[in-house]
Length: 137
Image (cartoon, rainbow, N blue to C red):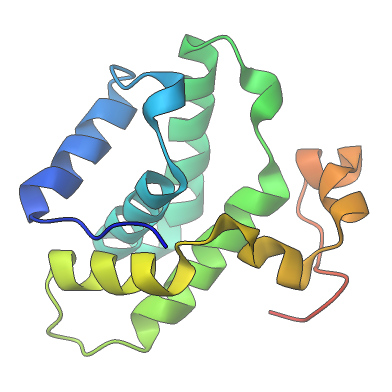
């Protein structure tokens, strides 16, 4: 399980490092992806997917690994994080919300509860949204 964040400043540093592409490509973890999703969803649920997509493209382009982008997984994780956030108390702080999401979704293998490995590896799933084939969201 991923370690919790110790402060909202830690979360903000993750966001700023990611968006400015100063974070190394090997230094951005699944936990950090989750923190970004929480950050984007708490600021504007309607634009969270697009903001994540744009930020991921910029980050991957900076690190010359755009081929690693996966549209289905990007949308999948935003949807899972959104669902987790909706289950929390409205007055949860950013730190509380992020740590709750990290605790619940900190294992990146959760995606394979919903998707077969074959579907995740498909070009169709990498390029566009594909519904889960094992379990509905």
